[in-house]
Image 1 (spheres, rainbow, N blue to C red):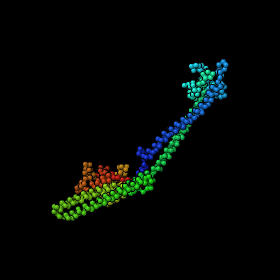
Image 2 (cartoon, rainbow, N blue to C red):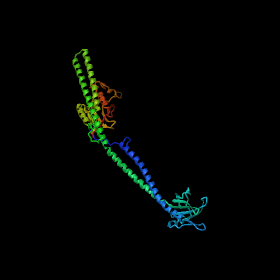
Image 3 (cartoon, rainbow, N blue to C red):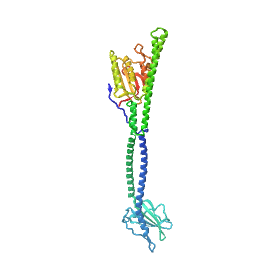
Image 4 (cartoon, one colour):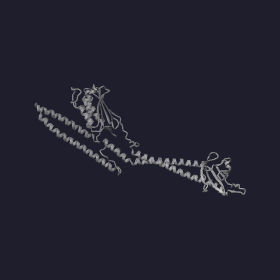
Length: 467
């Protein structure tokens, strides 16, 4: 009875360390992160510079009006100019000015200030430029601890030192710069994500022929195709041509080996048959020795030729044998052969499970093990075929409800000519042949105790699914 169809997972991993797509995406992501930080920082710095420069122009005008119209009267008292800006008259309005009279040591002796400062005063710059007469811009705290942008200029009017200062609340400027940085950063992040998605799609589409080539190679390996037939870009075409040439060469080598094996079999078997015929049934000691040695040589020739053929077939990637039909055929045949004994063979295998090798070899492996189970069972035999991962291949379990055998003899019965019961029919070569074929395909045969009470043969063989 066949099990339900099972399909293997053929989705290739794209984000592993060995993935070319993952490598390209990671490199693009690193570049975009670096570019994002660089561009965002540069744009924010430029916007901040432009905004602050425009902002400073306003307080520079106030200072300019102050020192342009400041004079001293006949009594030496300073004449404060009138500024037409209502904000400087409102307390803590955010716009302030101040004129400080200094002594010879630059110590403040008197302060004149806008009504907006009330009882507070503006702080001067840490370093005062007395020579150039150029304004100095700096940040400070205002009367209400709000951030101010201030400008100060040191001048001598009528040979009297004066320090002119104007300041304005820069909270709005800082807020605008922060909003610009947020909007710019968010936009660049969206741009980077969109570009990464575009790069991913571009790489996937651009490397699609490589993925198609991988899938087609898998079909060649599984025996669905004998060579690569797809249409590929000009950069990949030379690779496919070389692979096809290699596949053709491999097939030629296998066929050549098979031919050599057949020729060797014919060349050796004919002289052996002549020797056996010549010896005939003569009771002479020489004739008896010829018969025994010729039979031994024939057995050895068959043994080594079988192994050579199996090894050659195992190397051929195109061979594939569905498991389910072979088990069904063997079960029906052996139940007929052992119908007097009432043998029942219960077998299970996925419909799409395939042995990666020739049908004749799988029939010989499964057939010998099943026949051995039929000989030793009471009535019941259970056969299970399943596929693990690609490295494990297929596992074939054949169990019977017979007497089994001691564990100490599990390895012994695989030796050529070894027999568990000398009274039982057979030459003792069946299990040895099975072991040789299994090893030729890179598999393994071993025995365990069956849950049915008898012997369980466990065979691991290369296999895959039929898609």
